Image 1 (cartoon, rainbow, N blue to C red):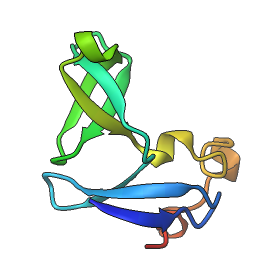
Image 2: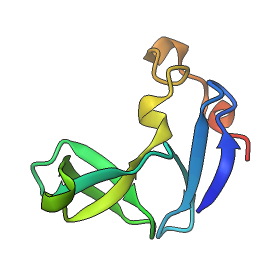
Image 3: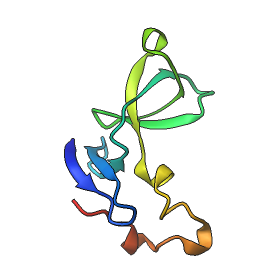
Length: 94
């Protein structure tokens, strides 16, 4: 994991996590406690780079902790399909 980076589009802090595939994923730096489950409404990246599905949970009821992809929360990249940057423009600054 690499901390201290900022999104080049919105300027918010991001956390880079190396995924199992070897790719780096920009994530929001605030951890989210979750409970694993196929019916979960969250897709999160764990500290070790695993992508998991689950539901938000309380500390005493959680099965793990993960991070939300910044692509899902960045106001500059989720403003709408017509305003979405091309794949080449979605690279984040490190």
